[in-house]
Image (tube, rainbow, N blue to C red; front, side, top):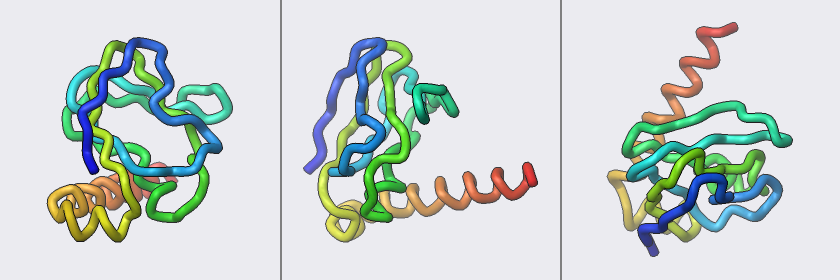
Length: 109
């Protein structure tokens, strides 16, 4: 259900509009989030989780995830219910991450 994957600089990890089949955890490298071809965020911190929102909401990906440099990510595949049962530590990290993003968004208002 989880697999370490390597992506070369410029390689698309997940494409905007595709169906979510899992989420990703950054192990090493730097990744960018692109909406409509425009970079809206970048991450280089080990343990960063991306791709979880589309999985949770059961919607198509709202942005693309692209390797900004050679990167390694843990791809965790499955439905959110399965991930909650099998990976409670990842689930807790998702909750904390979403709460931090929400808090940051409300600070900017």
